[in-house]
Image (cartoon, rainbow, N blue to C red; front, side, top):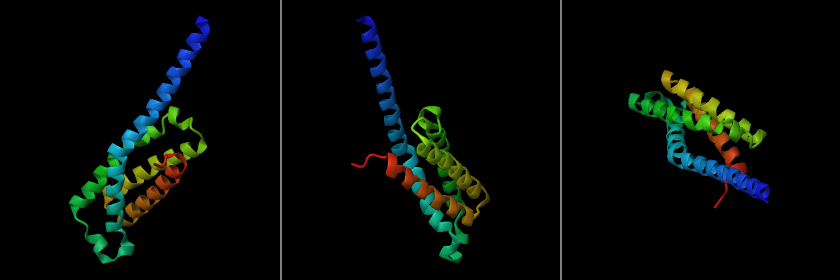
Length: 140
């Protein structure tokens, strides 16, 4: 009987840890990822050369804001790419890897003030977020 109780307790503990990890991701998305990506998407539109000659006139302060936003996404990208989270399957693993790569691309583009590259990274990041959320984010 003790063995059954121990197994049950262990199973509940693991399930609780998995739920807590999911809650941590939700909290991190709300507190860090949402505001940072909002900035990246907005600046991506501001600096997109397809939006005309004013794209090249984005202020240094706006570029600094874009860089800071991209850098804030490094920790969430590492979290999404953890072994524990990658165990959620190949779709998760690809989305998380793409998120990390595109975050790095946005950071590099912001450092060099490359509007075309930043805009491309922002657009691709938005597509990655949308695809991942359509599969994994519970809609309420």
